[in-house]
Length: 333
Image (cartoon, rainbow, N blue to C red):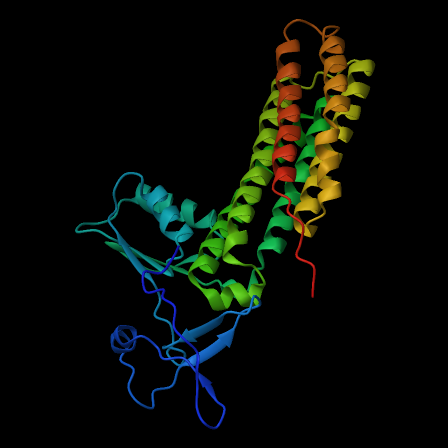
């Protein structure tokens, strides 16, 4: 977003050789600057100078106040993603037990958010995270590692008729979602805080790609859940040997695709990213064989098997989308 104050000013020089630029009068007055006031000046990695008029002030926590109304969980999640530090739920009357339980469930899904105060008509939530301790690439890697393990396990559940393992895959999706929400919060904080952007080494323009990448990783987890639900619906039925082998081959190709896509995204390896799209012919061929082999199963199982296979195919499509985000890293000068 372009600041409406943006303007071109000439660099001047004193007789002693010091360079200086005058700051806008309206801006200085808005922040109470006077002759002799101190400001912090810092340089960004791309050569820009940032002037902070409140460098010595402790940032005030951002506070949001909500009413205990329907869809309160969505309201709390929204404020968390927007970077609010304190979320107050205040009612004119006693907050119901059901609504309190809904608040607690919501808190459990959001990393760092805790209930710090509570009485009959009020619940105060506070986010205790230090944003600089959560580099986006590490959060993305962690979320991906869980989703990748889910992908591996759901195929084993399908091949071996392991309902318990399929249910484990479904349960793990909650952690993928928690990390997804955390990453969105961190990215939005980076966009609003240039100094944090410098500290974490993530430029605001990169936050958009991270946001899309996080969504694709979360979608991979969702597709694993859909496949796992079909594994549960099979009620322990094992796949025919040929079908099971083809499914394992299909999984291996799809797994390689999203692993290459994620690594290419984080490293800026365009060559590796290109290999993901180039795998389409191989993956489509295996999928066709998978559909053909599925016909040997009983008629009541075929729809579940094909639906699970379709979810795995969609994982590949998400991998292609992730690879399309890859841009080469800037060469160091």
